[in-house]
Image 1: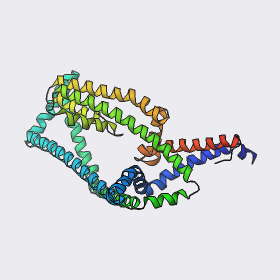
Image 2: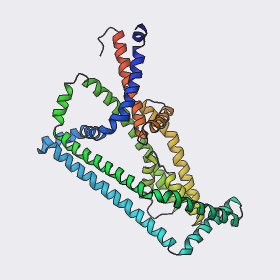
Image 3: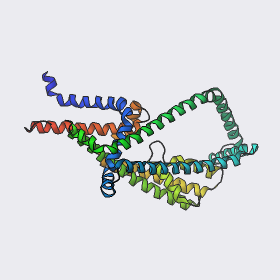
Image 4: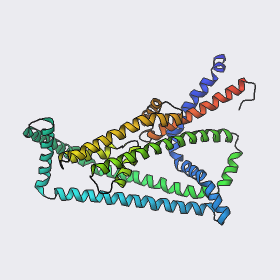
Length: 356
């Protein structure tokens, strides 16, 4: 018992780690639509309240208008991406509609590799052809039989995401309609102030993270737009630079998702070495910019070392799956805020004040 009293703060912190893990693992996936709805309504409440006082329009109706606008923007973005994907598919179809065109392009690529690496072009052609045959046989034996099962899994996942979006939309409208009642009920809860303090601390950290990401993403967009414009590969470099900069902010993708295939096409198919060199330099500058700015901006806003952020992402993926890319850092932020609450309560208790 004496050991427990002496180490009660340590035991509380260990309990916080276990509670955060169990909550993120099993509780958060069930409550994500309602957490999302509550946060969005809290964020939009000043605007909703002002519209209600100024024009006597109910908050739920205003939130419904916001949802419709957001859905319209999302649909427009999907339509734009679909159009660009269609153009790419048509371009590929035009290149490969002739049975001999694919072989010719493949041999051109092999010849470019052999010239670049000073290898015999015939040996490179034979090696690449053999590997393609191996891949074809592997696809017949392993990939194609599981295609229908993968399609069914994809349909189930799409249905689950659709249901979650529908529940989130309904929860948004209901929360906006009864926000004041929900807030008044929450204030009667004994732990309301502590919960609000923790949430505010997390939101400050997340807000700082998002601001830092926006700064880095804006710089990367400018660099990508400038590089694409200098290379002269497209007539309108602005949307291309913005799109590549947006991909750079995503955890899985990055500027290399676009730049690396683009550079290979310029080198091996179009023989435009100057443009390829410019895009390669642009890609290197973008990577260097993110590597230099991300630890300083994000680590400074979060109050956490960059290596801890990296470790939280890695551990989050191992513990929670793909969603751990977000849940891992969020778990670290939640643990940090709860630990601060425990340390503050312990310090106030030692100073003679009543414990929180």
